[in-house]
Amino acid sequence: MKIIFLDYDGVLNNTYFLLRQKERGAENDFDPKKIEILKQVCDNTNAMVVVTSSWRFNERARMFLLEKGIPIYDVLKPDTGTRGEDIDLWLQETPMEIEKYVIFDDDTSHYSPQQMKHTICTKECFSNDLCAEYDCCMGLQDKHIKWAKAMLED
Image 1 (tube, helix red, strand yellow):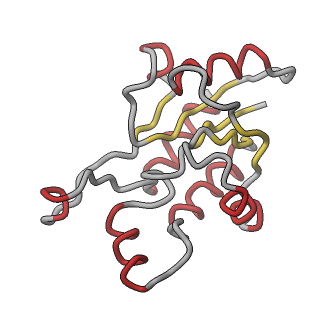
Image 2 (image 1 turned 30 degrees about the horizontal axis):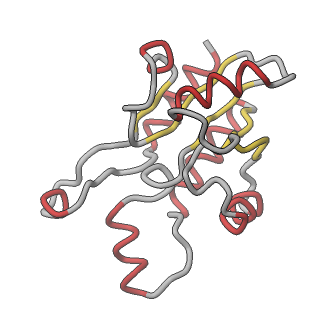
């Protein structure tokens, strides 16, 4: 089994998208373009998703992703340590044989050097003034499809 450990905020959205959504009064915090990129990675690699986000117990968010075709396999247990430690614990406890995994996150400070070999960081600054005001990240990009595919299929 191949696994994608998924953070939501900063991966399936970005600051600019959230600001536009807030201005419109929209309920959905996920950028459809980012969901499509994640779906392509899952479809191209037959990977399943384990949600690692601090939003991981948001049932509405999980149901929305499932409705969009994102294959959510599991959710990390409540925080017992750093996100990296929680992922290691999940990998040790899962009864499934995990062939390969990739981590999508905009904050890599919680990961060990070994885990960084499996991590795709989605934090890249915008080319406008938002970066001066906000901790910006671009979220999933088309290039991440290739990167994740290479990491999950090598």
